[in-house]
Image 1 (cartoon, rainbow, N blue to C red):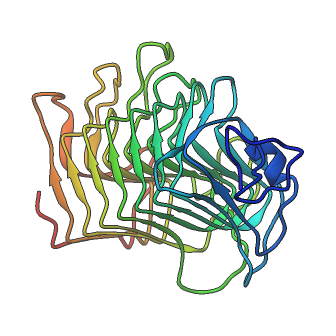
Image 2 (cartoon, one colour):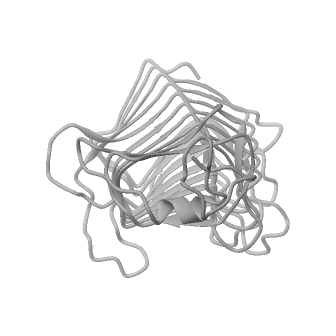
Length: 311
């Protein structure tokens, strides 16, 4: 147990909780659960320990949404670095300049039922990771000040943990709204998307990892009033996007892009867009489209299906 009124020299029990999550994450092992009591907990916190396939490490709020983890400085509220078999559930996270929840070079990570808001970077960010479950989170008012072009939920350069068939990445039942870059970011605005799957080709920044072979499922999300696209698959393959609602996104007037979509497939192959609802507001941007299937530089999107969508 961790409580803002606890003591790191205590036993860590319900009756004698630790004071800081940073202390607790240095002690956990497979099968352990950290329970955060109501109140404001100090971030940033980095977790580098791993569970096992049958014994996850769990970080959970005693009462969902009432344990608040706040990072006032340069780092993410909670960063998982190089670890595996971790579940984070029911936390309220805020970070002044970076991400609410971050997974970097991880696998088998579950972010479920969290609220990530008012973060300078992404609400939820994953880089170089595999086997992710991002489910039933509420993600809003993020991406405003981080100069590295962030979004509400961002998965960047996914890396395969193994070659098993089927879906490896799940983004489902999330509410993602009002994430947008602000004038504090002086570079040309390109992001502030609701949900983005970005560079699964691993072609940027000198990466040599090659195309990510795993499949991704994005389903039953509601994305609205974000500065960039609602749902964007950019330089990413083997993605299924189904039963989502994307409404009145592309609100950022500082985004100069002339191709924009509520649902957007750009430079991606073998992607499947089924039974989604998309409503665009062309008054907000004359470049807005409900559906965008775009390419640049002579690239060809192949094996892309758009079926049963209401636009």
